[in-house]
Image (cartoon, rainbow, N blue to C red):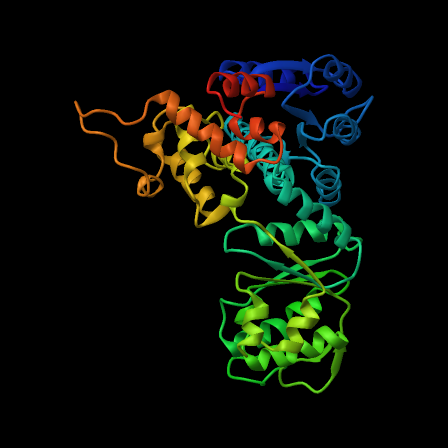
Length: 444
């Protein structure tokens, strides 16, 4: 139930508004001046403050500034009988959620309050979602290979060196590229992404380098390219192996000299942009086969970071799935979802040829279609079970007991883990429990 504080030095307005909002289900308090309102808010916060603009002891604008200083999330709506453009601008600059002119009807003020509270809720959801998204699971890996990769990436980020990211599709190369930018001295400058697979050669050339008016059909005005937009920041070329030979030649010059001309132009432009490139193909093999310029490969191959596939770090699958489920639940307004033990076991044994991208899609689908707050094995996509042996028919002898399945799973995780702590984390148990299970199952 939303909590509203009404502040107005006119007794009748204050009482009428308080009675109206209380009648439609709000928790309502009232104050007859700004200083009293500030004291009341220090004792108990409110979701929304509805305050008069012009009051004797403390104006509504001053109260607004004080409220925002204490709690920026509190919504403040200003009411005034003396509306001017200047006062409205001052209120919005100070952080007012809305501004309403007296006289107004009760229905009008109700709609204004409901709209402001709805916006407050959406902003809160966005903050929670942003917080979830910003806690990149890539950075929380328990895999020794990923930890080494991230350690090198952190060190490389502080330099201006060109970085080449390799690895299978869906492993998170774009996430790592953005993280490197955030760790770098250029973090407050632009991070510009160019996907080399989505456009034709002519459009991609224009996208990268910009163009001059009249340089081709549809070029009705001068347009700067992505490289100019990345000045003093970072440009990330995703799937750089898909650049055509002509674009490889032009981009090679930029890598060497940080200069280029727009399409149809003759003025040489110089841009200071850090280059990160990524490819799911082996560029060294591509260069040897003359499918990629060898000199461009060596220019890009200053620091190469290979992002391991998800099947190379199985201990990360379940923690990553839990994180992805939290984000998917927030996006789909189902924030309390969780995975059952059976669902987690199914996720852990699948090979994930599509890597993190495939895992994200599987979790998103389950978050949308599951009928309870617990995602069961049956809620996961059928594709996860195609490579698994068929369950025995009713009455048929069962080849493996539950204990044997658990033992085999523990043996597999132990073999893929560098330490007992790492194995215990992948299994979702503590080291003591893992030690007891090893003793029980006589696992060396």
